[in-house]
Image 1 (tube, rainbow, N blue to C red):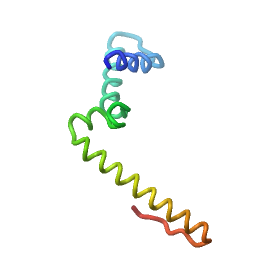
Image 2 (image 1 turned 90 degrees about the vertical axis):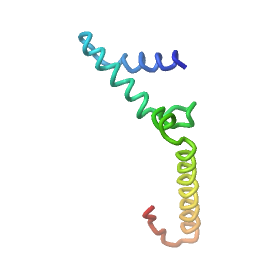
Image 3 (image 1 turned 180 degrees about the vertical axis):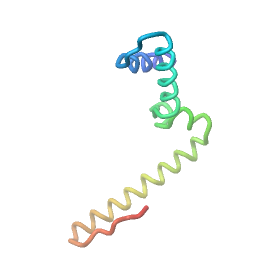
Image 4 (image 1 turned 30 degrees about the vertical axis):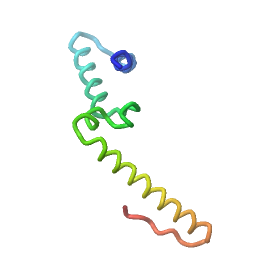
Length: 93
């Protein structure tokens, strides 16, 4: 796991210009912050580490599944209406 994190940091630093030590420190800090707060990890069911370890991952996953199921239902209803030649109402949710 640590080797994968190090690889991600290395890959992210490859595209950045660092002219001195302080630039390197700032760049690494930005990458680590992004890695922990924005990047979704497949091993954490595509949650960020912050959400997974500091939140309630089960609740977040239930909420996500509810949204997915709702989106599928809406898409199915729209497709049925289109096939019948009817107008498709825009959803506000």
